[in-house]
Length: 264
Image 1 (cartoon, helix red, strand yellow):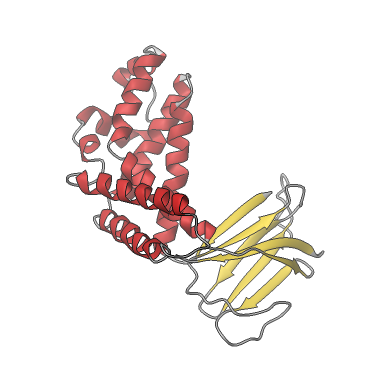
Image 2 (cartoon, rainbow, N blue to C red):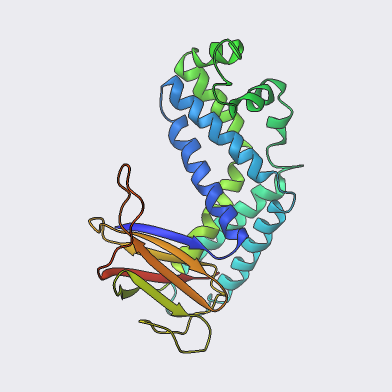
């Protein structure tokens, strides 16, 4: 299965972008090659740009607390596993404590590292990190694998609480959606949002208060969803996969897919 996610607000967009960047940092840091470790550092700098928002820390702490209070309401429910609930609450409390323990802006120790910032200032210039521009960086990339890996672990350690917190929030967000099996007639699907009860080849009943929509296709499906949405409706148009030297073309056949509205 291939899952496509479309966030409805900037807050969820930021969390999804951070998740993708953290995944890249983790993946490339675990590999031995200098090129892979360079990619890890590029993604780490992008994480640094995103987490620089002054309100991100408070947003994460407040959301974790809101989810903790929600879960506490299920303590006396006979349908909820007490062990699973306790585990989830413990995970949230640990993540909140780790965030509260961070002083100053996320990643400030990286910003205080003049050598890293000299690399960051050139790394997005085309060819700006060539060995003749950054000889000390070229030296570092040629150090033993253990040396580079230890450095990357040290640089990412202080922002891992952000990764853990957003991982919990996004997991809860994704698990909140109920999947529906639907068909896009001639590659088009429209759904009215709210209580209007009108709209195309669809049913209603979901509001733009949902924070994200998930579209799930079988891996062999030869189409790609494009999503547009406002407070009144969501439109999904399925396009044929891109081909070299060809303009994007609409899929004109029926497409079976799963749809889930997610909300915290």
